[in-house]
Length: 158
Image (cartoon, rainbow, N blue to C red; front, side, top):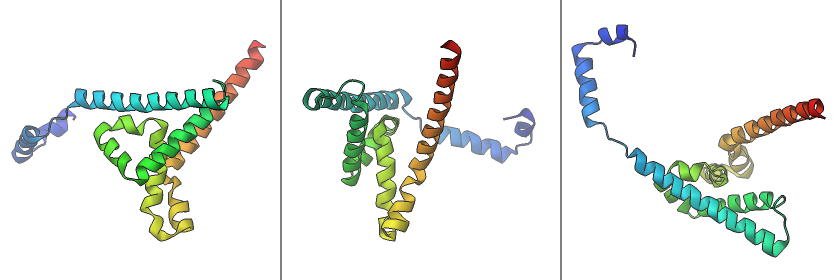
C-alpha cells in the first residue's frame, strides 16, 4: 500500500487491521502443495496406466494413444463428478485435481449438473461450456499461434 494511503488511515482502521492480522487463519501452504502434488501425480499415474492398456490391448502407438487416454480420463472425471466423489477429491487436493485434464471434465459436468433443471438446451447445453469454453478458446488460439510459428520457422529453416 502506498505510504500516503497508510498515513491517511484512522486509528480505528489501523487497530482493525492489527486485529484482523491476529485472527487471520494461517494456511498450511506446504501441506497443501504436497497434497496437490500427490493427487495430481496419482491422476497422471492412472492416465499413464490407461495409455499402457490402450497400447498393449488395442494396438495404439505412443504417438496415437494421447487422444483416447485424454477422453478416458475426462470420462472418469465425469463419472466421479456425477457420483459426488470428485468434489471430495477437489476439497482435499485443491489444484491437484483442477490442473490435469480431469479438472476440465469436472468443470463441464458440474455446470451441466447445476443447470439440468432448466432443460437440456437452455440449461445443460448453454451453460455446460461457460467455464470450460474459455479453456477451449484459449487452447485453440494457442495452438493456432504455435502452428503459425512452427510454419514460419519451417519455411526459414527449410
